[in-house]
Length: 154
Ligand code: ADP
Ligand code: MG
Image (cartoon, rainbow, N blue to C red; front, top):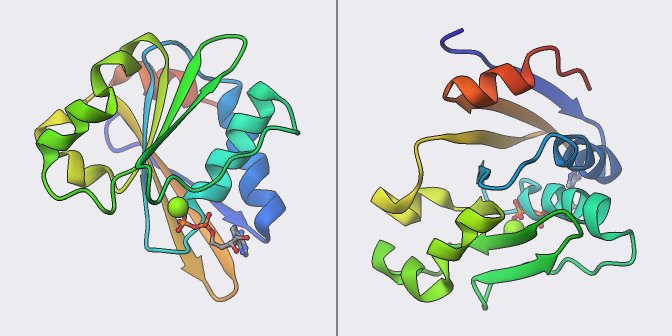
């Protein structure tokens, strides 16, 4: 099961949020999702759909552009949403409560900025702009995520 990759076309903002909601249903404590993609690719939008699926549609999910992290108390587990774009050095993740996230789920925009702190067991999710629309690519790293995504349809 090496090199498994799933791609989905996302025709609008709502489709991006729906994919987030579908992924939400697969999550467990300790999960890490690395969200790759340029500015405006839809990383925060997907996170919004995921968080709202677990916390309720009324939950506001702002971009943590300046705070770098935003946390949510979902009934099942806490969720941390990071945006590391403005971080200067990987060591700064420790000041953001990085270690606590093992007790919940972490979604990370600009994950490469975490350097060696980024766990190797994770789901890599890349969003690309395709004209006005978006395309999502899911690449499970490690056997656990590969099994969970086996048969995933969208
Ligand atoms: P990022 O967090 O990657 O910088 P955002 O989630 O803030 O990006 O999204 C940027 C813009 O893209 C938003 O205006 C959002 O509504 C829009 N968007 C998200 N998904 C889609 C899609 N599938 N098709 C068209 N626009 C989308
Ligand atoms: Mg964002």
